Image (cartoon, rainbow, N blue to C red):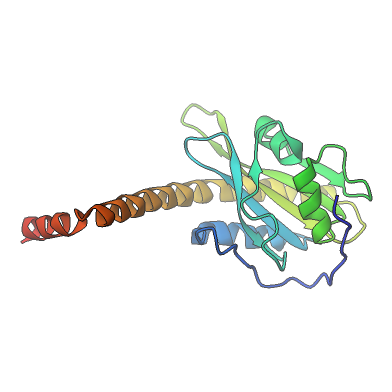
Length: 205
């Protein structure tokens, strides 16, 4: 496990991993909303793709590094996985040996930025028939050695429900855009993109 590095708790500008696409505006706004919770110093936002049960960390606020971006969260594995599987928040203290429910990579990410207490909050939407759907997980960490208050936990759960629908919609649009970009890239490689563009031009005239 990485040794905890305590850094200044002042919230810093977000940084995105250059190997990952810049996430939609709604995801960035949701992460910033969680960062405004009392005593929150760092946030990672993991979002589930439409055809997968696995969520991936797409954005962070306050981390001062790209550590954690791209981390896959599997249902039932680790703290975030427990949230994905059950739809209930998880709270824990990150001690010298880490929290018992954390998986190794979660512990490494949290210790790297000096997190002392963590909330893992589900992003929940409600389906047409009233069923709950977990769209992702917000990891909210504080570098202070003070447990989260009940008021802050309740506020974070409300925020998880409020932000979930916008995050889900933005993720779906992002997936569709990326699929079209891949299609056009493949067509360009095969030399067919020009013909399709010309055909499209004729149709619109």
